[in-house]
Length: 364
Image 1: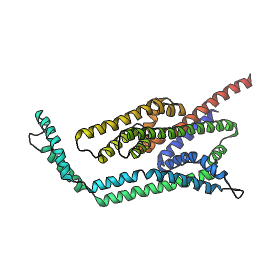
Image 2 (image 1 turned 135 degrees about the vertical axis):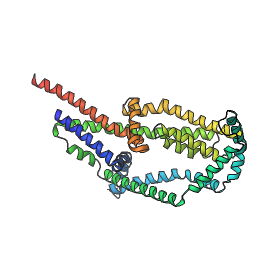
Image 3 (image 1 turned 45 degrees about the horizontal axis):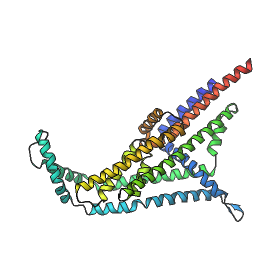
Image 4 (image 1 turned 30 degrees about the vertical axis):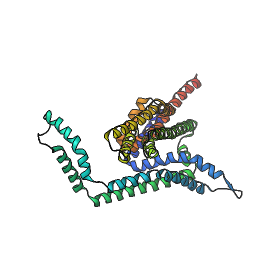
């Protein structure tokens, strides 16, 4: 039995090294497993539908599930099209000179304060001049050709990743339970029941976690959309949707959602005095403060601590370890991956202790 655990630890270490070295492939596989778990109930429902006395072929059912997902993503994307169009119009009508004139008075006040304490040179208009020079330098250094090539490279990477994930997910759904059966076939008969129990528990915890995430996204979207709408903020649904999705990124997500809401609110609001902008900022920040308090007090403890059954400190460390390994995507998928390893080790350890007790009883 001890030799088995040595092999098990070596297997996990090999798996971790392989996952780190082939991080892209590992990420595709993890995303595909999650998508397969989410789409399996819908695929099974479509597959059970009878047409002319025959079940819908599973391959067609999978494509139908893909169609539902694509339709939802497209409908959600429609919320962003008016905002993007508005921002493009604002950029095309951007007048730098008028912006400089609007900034002249506040910059002069800041200058006088800094000069009073001898923090800058005693030269009138130096801040505005520095701002002009900085903007000109940025515009001069902006490489349109490089920007286009980078955009093409990013688009190509996203397209390749999407196709790879779609391909892997398709076969995971087509061969329902294939990965699980192949893994169980590698396990000796002595540990078969223990392995089945481990797989079942891992699947249950991950299902609870994914369902909890879905509820969290929906709750944040409804709270933010309701608050921003009542506050009279333009594009409230778009801001709420971005905030709900960004909140999937632990710790950094709420900041991104709030920053996006402030930028959109300020850039699209039609205000003439500073007090109106200040009140707008106050309303947006207040809405997101209420959303985050609700999320931190009610939603996250239920989802992360109870569904995964891990201590909050564990979650904190694992999330930042995922960020170190794979950036934002690592932060998002750190908890599901950690759940698999944690539950597997704990279940096998429990089985090992039970095995020892059984062995002692048998020899007495």
